[in-house]
Length: 257
Image (cartoon, rainbow, N blue to C red; front, top):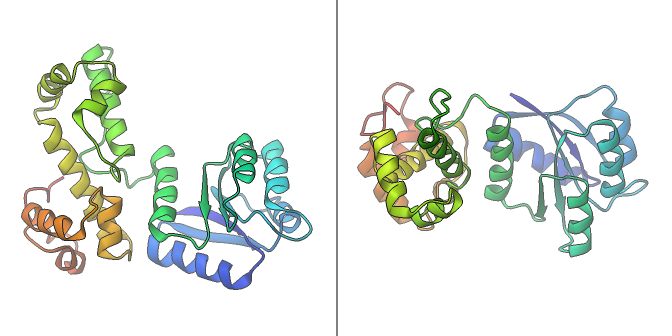
């Protein structure tokens, strides 16, 4: 369970974010809240969160000034900004301070879930995707390249993933990468991506209360109808049925991960 701190001047928004983060997205506990940057800095002396989410425009001390001071004391803290102002200057300034993401209000649940999921992936959370973990280190170039491809797949599961794109990222001919991937993993590249997408979906269905279309989006499916058809073919049950199944009763081609 990761620790999270909220900095937001509107109590109603803080309450809504706390519920969304703890009850819907899951995997986080809100360990502190503050209504401005000054109070947040005081609280951070005794509370050491893994993630800090902050607004920008607040009384006494705004979010950007607070982040500047936080970076002096806690250079590695994972910081997300939520702002109602789509102002490039704010974003540009915030990026200088090494924030991890800049999200606009009203908060999009899937965008926030994606940003918090990125923290988990970067910091070795225990919910790494089944089927996407790396096996042993080796100095052989082929395995190093496939390891890199797998990392890129895990990072882009909510986006389009093509063999051509992956080949460009590792500077290989796409046909050669296809053969290398099958040789190293025993799977076709497209089958591997599908497996990872399904594992992401199964994880989100079991560990969050996100709606089916939100799970579909985070798993890389623009059409929830297409996602539901693929999911049923893969697991033998609909997403809703899968969510209701007790642990250990999941079947289908991807059940063993």
